[in-house]
Image 1 (cartoon, rainbow, N blue to C red):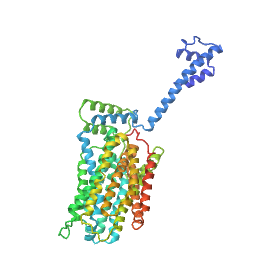
Image 2: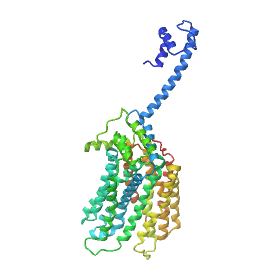
Image 3: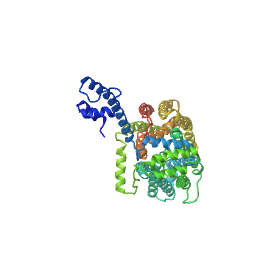
Length: 548
């Protein structure tokens, strides 16, 4: 069919027969009562009228084309746009609300995150006892924590991308199983290299489950509750820290006379149980419907949502609306997810490169500039400050044996107010204001160091610093799943997590240089890093993606 632009061109060029046909078919006789005419004035009058109508139609066509182009940029399978499907999906989850199925998902994810915290912190408490029984040198002892972080770096990158290809739940089951089983095996080893290998693979499991847990939870939650529920899951990091210290306090100070079964073995076995428990619960849960929709597996997505939803009429209606959108005649063929090493390597590299594509480059660079200074300053300061105070304190002051456990419990509990603020305010004020305020408070709190000069005061300042920084990490966990699309969400979490591990190692080395020097340099460095991150946070994009 000829467009009105072509019709107008033929009119202007003087096609008389077509001029008459166009004039009749467009009902212009009521406005200009002429048929075929050679009169220039009458013809100009008709052309003016046609021009007005044509320009209006062209504007409508351009607007329609623009909207169509915008929709196609984020188009999910079929004629239904990503916006329509995402809105229908969110409307369904809003109708479902917080039911017992969602509570199970949140609880299981919280246990998974808690288990990761236990694995990270357990070595710091049991290191001395492990070193005694396995007869480790000082150099071997220093590698115990480092090998776990090396595994986490690799695991975050590999499992994060795998979750975007093969599914959140499937990869969570593998990574958590690796975490729990390898951690338990490390408690049974008798040589340093066996122990080191087990902890490395445990680190790979931890690095995988950390990024995927938040992606999985966020895809079961309506937008209006997303910030609060993700912050609720993130609070389990605090619970894991307290549990790690409490278990150490209850087990490690009491020696076991058996030559093999020392208290540290019992402690590490207990720390591995939450990970295996989360695997058991995850095995009964469904795959993320958002992932299934993105892969074209619409029937599986509807089935998962039907098991998750209630039988109320309102929920059934919203489920039917979503089903109709997904039952488009032009839906894509479900994607093949068979394992291939070479294919996965290509997908992995492409996934990382895609984070710097035109659509995501700005988001990725800004988040890097926000996240890395915060983690460098936080982990560096938290390592340096207690060591600095101990070096400045009177050497005759002997700390009680359980002092380190009490200190860890107090410091972990200090993050509770920040976690509560995150849970109840994120969905109302948004993550950016909370992020900026927390960073500024963190920068200011480090200057209180000049007023503290004893171990007890060290605990107080550490608690304060931990309290004001807790919302920062929660907001990062909210921003990443909100700013990245479904097909790149796990990859983004794993990529940023890997950079964080590198920064933590660099911060540990950098701040260790300042233990025996003036506190001015580390204080100013931490404050500048936090303030820099706060300024850059103003440029973090709003969470407006149509991807759920």
